Image (cartoon, rainbow, N blue to C red; front, top):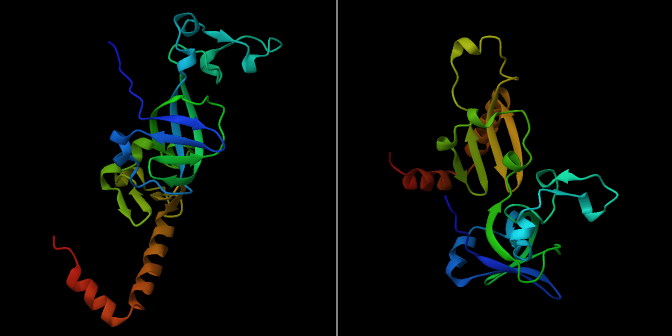
Length: 213
């Protein structure tokens, strides 16, 4: 089995550091915003040599005083597939340029993918296991991602209190929080109070424009 990776852009370094997105992939950055954190996957082309790709152990940080360690336990550029992973903050987006802070990749390094940083995936905790998350029921409202937990059998929850049951994941940008069933109930009550305080004229317009099932 073989794989083919194609660059979607290149790292450019000068007075500023930015990602130059190739024209055919420009539509793919729609939705990214200044201030977003993203994951960059780069191809360390200077390490793409047969002899370097065979290196399986290195001295961390290139310092021979450090004991040899397998490359999968390091961030060495020498690896069977010379992929590099960076987490960076978008400083500005201008046309096909995504400006970021300085990184140690060389000018001209191919970028093979960009992914939005998601705390739940990239800094996981033990609150809700991924298999318990009901992804198909997730909703995007404005800049909020709201992802419910899958329903469990009641006989498994007899000893679990509403304060202990994590009910929903709420993501805003790269920040993630988990609400318990009780907290979710309190949030619903607060939102209802806020809705009730909306001007009648606005509520009437909302009712008229409400999507039909």
